[in-house]
Image 1 (cartoon, rainbow, N blue to C red):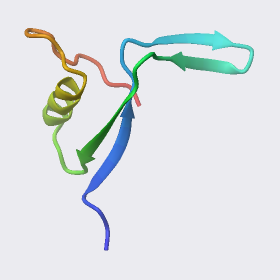
Image 2: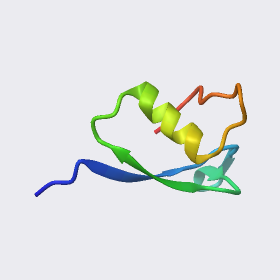
Image 3: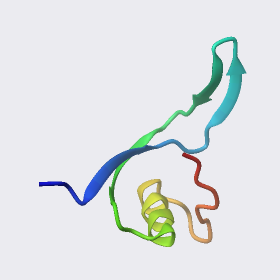
Image 4: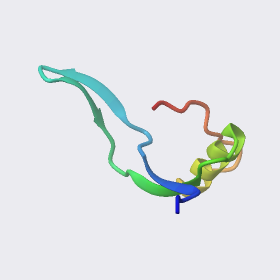
Length: 65
């Protein structure tokens, strides 16, 4: 039986820097979120915004995989 959801780690307010070993992502507060495999991009952005407690008027603009 397959699952219809997947867990993901969300890094936000992060910095991408280049080290001698390649790109490195640094984030102070990663969050774990459970996502439905069939959710739309708008629903994904809303779920991420809810998880990281965005203030009124703020929205998730970019998602990088």
